[in-house]
View (cartoon, rainbow, N blue to C red):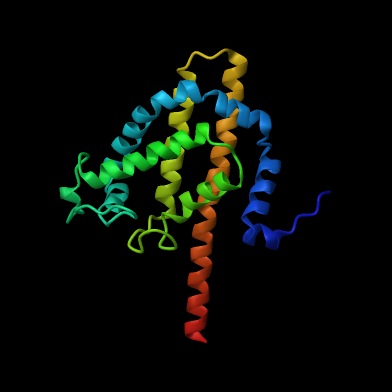
Length: 204
């Protein structure tokens, strides 16, 4: 039985991801399958981005989070939900970010820098990083990642890959998105823990 330092899992990002990769079984062969899909998937990123934002616009619970100023955006922001159209500059800005993220998943090496990037994806949707006004509930993040995961599956199945490559690619992306899911959820747990500590300090 391998001994795991569970406290370190919560405080050491590299150790945590190493544990996840080993436990889930995301290895070099999977990374090769992800990178191998890049030539076919990269040209489809714009249509994936459009599909994601069409879904986000369909619900007030997700679309409202694009009204506050987004981190790094310097243009005019919408005054309310009704003013936020798909052609608003802030939406175009966010779509560009999503496009770079999806492209990064299939092209970048999975090194320490990439791990930090995937971790920041989760942190950026809480007040702990980026805009203090941006605080997306975890249920919306889970819903979005589930939609993105299904979109990847549908896209991979449309590529007409040979069966062996198709299976390897689907399994690799499934494992990768579970790692991303954990790196999102961990920041919400940290936020919850901080809130509990604050309540405890106030009532003491």
